[in-house]
Length: 355
Image (cartoon, rainbow, N blue to C red; front, side):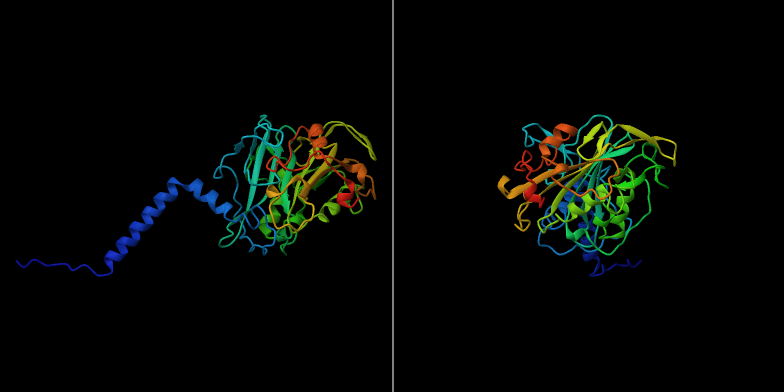
């Protein structure tokens, strides 16, 4: 019997090599996924991810591709110490806007990334600290820069935050009742893509706000938002927007007492902030082309602006609303800009902010 012989196709060894390379690469990614993902995000450090000064606007992000810190993101990082020498915990030690993350059992942290194309597959949008007991955000930290502006428009679709269990979040189908749904990070500051804008319409970024004289044209909060928008610069403006819940004595609005409201969408009690604040950090010139983490205290400026949660139509931003970041830290119990040791938190000069 004649034995039949099989000749190997000259292309088959090449195919074997390709398959082997793919398998080896997949194995490496499986073993080192967190390192690769972290490196990929930090590769964009000169654009949107950390310091977007002097860069082109990123490509629009594809819809439905929001990447979250849980469960796939890296664990929080604990640094040797913040500006006050105490250890601090943050999601990314390279993100200048982040406050310290306190582990008190009531807080949940969401670190929202927005998807993109090609090399800019993801960049950060904002970080939110959400109180379970209050069913309300405590603060939202975000970089503000022209590169986050685009033509996506306003989503307007209020949805639950997929990063947290639905049962701890307030339903936002309609307004709270006597209060409107107030953004901490403004919708207009995330119009780079429809996805980025939608992320601002989630309970981790929405708190009850008085409308007349506050969250309306010419209102105290709207005027403060417009003032902050005027501080955006090529070097990036880093902002923490937050809520105070204890009794607050406002120099203009008077005493605002702690209170709650019943959310007419789900019947659950929601804490109503007694005051809202914005904490700002940027370079003094606004055009250094360097990260704030590489600047000296003399090259930086920061300040806090606080308004009592009461409608005062036509209330403009003045030195009366301003305090040092250190003073707000004592008032709120938060620790701001822990990734920027040189931040001059004890100094707040009205003239530096055009007041």
